[in-house]
Image (tube, helix red, strand yellow):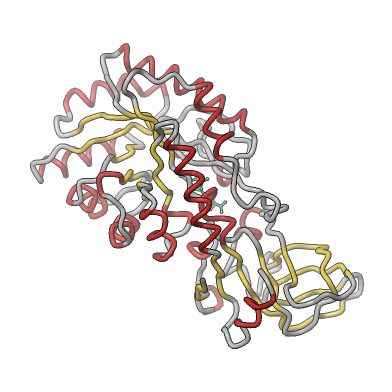
Length: 379
Ligand code: LLP
């Protein structure tokens, strides 16, 4: 962010989300190019950021979408998503949401339980339709990430475990309005250890083989999202290494002839293009340390409070000598702290502070706690 951009913000109400759309375009192009050359299909995980301006760029580049609610399906369609490329996941799809999927002819419902399969079958039958479905498998893999964003262990609520497969197959024989087309996996988010994905591949291979032996010729395998980004030094790695990520699957996954491989990246596409911009309200001198109190809080960006997540913090206005501060928000909770012991140039009231890498799970998770306004977005 250079000084001319910052001067333009003089009259802009803070806090706001700032998006670098050039970086988004470059990221989208890189991911798409690396996927295309391997014949892989990308469904952007809309939950990471559903801002229409971003969605339009992502869908215009030819991404499908992965949705977890009826409203995400509708938003994606409004922003140009191809209904035939929509996957619909989530353990608790309502009847109204399933009907949105059926009415729009989405690519597949990722089923997370047998009762859900029965319900989709009932609703499809009522419409005289057959729903293409995937089984979301819980592969019992440790994603080695924060426990709140780890989803593929047997104790997690997600997916169907191997011991239920016989029941699933018996059900599929009687549920005449379901058509099984794919196996789906997603073990967690912000995964930076590529060996986790290699382990997922080995599990996928054995499940894929098992379903083939039971007589299912599945056209698709979907390995979900999860690729992590560099929160520590975002300027060093603005675009994740998609080539290295896809190479893990190329090397470890055994697809049957004609089987297509699908991914659902969210964070890796949008995190680095977004920053939460706030102004310093006060600098408060404490006994042992000084506090920089900014006008953004955990209602605007909850990741540090919820997951102890690190977001790189920059003072965009000052060139002063370095000091150490705790950077905190105005909300009445001690967890409303963006980071402790942050080295910043000497900071004063009115300075612009950027919380970097906030494009994913930032704006979408904002709340009105303390009756605060949802932050605006600036491009
Ligand atoms: N597919 C499924 C089925 C998912 O549940 C998720 C994310 C994704 C794809 C996209 O994963 P990604 O590529 O973004 O890692 N709020 C948390 C992250 C929650 C992720 C939920 N599922 C955070 O701020 O870190």
